[in-house]
Each structure stands twice: as structure tokens, then as C-alpha cells.
Image (cartoon, rainbow, N blue to C red):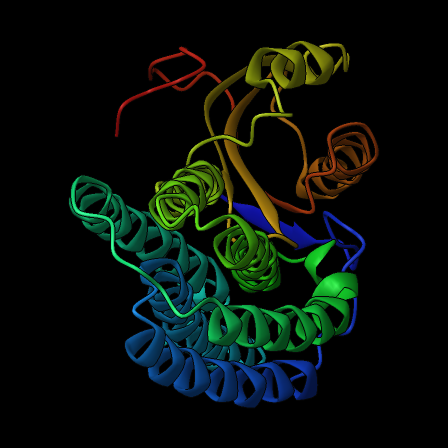
Length: 306
């Protein structure tokens, strides 16, 4: 017999996510992208074109984030019993992947340009990088609050933050090219932007991958949970444990519990309430599914490969 229960709490303090900041950010980034592509072609600046390419991925990532944000609010149904609660995690994974792919492309192009430096129209680079800093700065401020509590919004926020920093570096490069004719700095800045993208993208990719693969959250230790529950006098053994994160708000646990005696269902409900309280308050697990057992001949290992 199994029993499940859900506390009306969240694993994290989840803010009310709004779609409007994402929509504004999408339009701002479309404006920047078009301006920087035109400016990059006219000026011959690879750093500006790389910034434009990154901005274009920002547009795509923001659209993905917006769609995921909308889908995540859809209700569950018979065919989709979890609804679209994983949409935002999937969006995070996609966005992080694009960051790394774009970074690799930028590194290849920067190496080619470094071997063959070209004169660049620095005035255009300076003005367009200022546009990028202002527009992305507005977007960063719009998303900052929600980025603190949501992985999907954090992936969008980081896309925009790194692009703002990239625009700052392009501005510095433009000034160096204008006053010191240091045209090689264009390639160096492109490399720096690309390496930063890889660093940021890898962290997000790893976090979202672990959730998608149903790995146990890093801050939860299975053996500690087993030891805690086995302190209850009615419980003989806790085994066959699975713990996974559905999304950023929900952590699920399922386990088999071997009882010391053949108890009534009413007593099981009482014990189950105690288990739920322990798991929620000590481990922040908010969805619990327990299979009670008495004298059953099955594996008593904590982790069992299904």
C-alpha cells in the first residue's frame, strides 16, 4: 500500500514570476542585435559582431524562457499528471547549451582574426557598445528579482548580464582602438567574452542536467534521512529510497518502510504525518510517498536499482 502527501510549501521562496519583464527584454535585445549586426559589418569589428551574435542567442533564450514560464503555470491533466512543471528546467538546459556553443564559435573566429588583424571603425563600435550597455542594463534590472528564485529566469538573466559585460568590454576595446590603434584588442576581447560564456554556461548546464536526470539534490543526504526516520520506534527499516527534484519548488521522496509490527491504517496515517513533518522541516522535502511493509521479503538496501 502506498500513500502520498504534499505540503503546501515550496523548496525555495518562489516569487511571483511575471512575463512582462521578459517581453520587454526580448524587444530590447532585438533592437540591439539589429543595430550591432549593421554596425559590426560597417565597422569591421569582430567583437561587435560576436556581441550581436550573443544578443541574438539572448533573444532566442528569452523567447524559450517566456514560453517555459507560461507552460509551467498550466494545470496538470490526465495525460500530463505533472503538467509542464519541468518546462523551465528544460529551458535552462537549452539556454546553457547555446551559451557554450556560441562561445566555441567565437573562440574559433577570434583566433582567425588574431592571426590577421583588421582596421576597425572605432567610433561606431563605441556608440553601439553604449547602446548595448544601456539596453541590457535595463533588462538585467527587470529580471534580477526573479533570477534569485528561479533557475529558468536565472539562465535568462545571466544571458543578459554576460552580454552587458561583453558590451562593456567592447566599449573599452573601442576606446583603445580609437586612441591607441590597438586593433588586436578586438580579438582578445572576443576570446575573453567566449571564455566567460563557457564558465557561466557550464554551471547552469550542470545544475539543469542534474534535475533532468533525477539526481538527488546536492544539499540532501540520503543516509541522514534514513538514520533520522529509523529513530522512530515504530520503524524497523527504511529502504528502496528515491529522492529527486521535479523543479525548483518541489522535492519528492519515495521509500519503502518496514514496520516493527502489523499496524492499523489509522496508526500508519499518524506515523506518516510525523515522517512528513521531519522530512519537510529538516530536509525541505515537500512531496512524500511511502510504501509500508511488514515482514515482506524484499531487498532492504537503501538504494535499489529498479
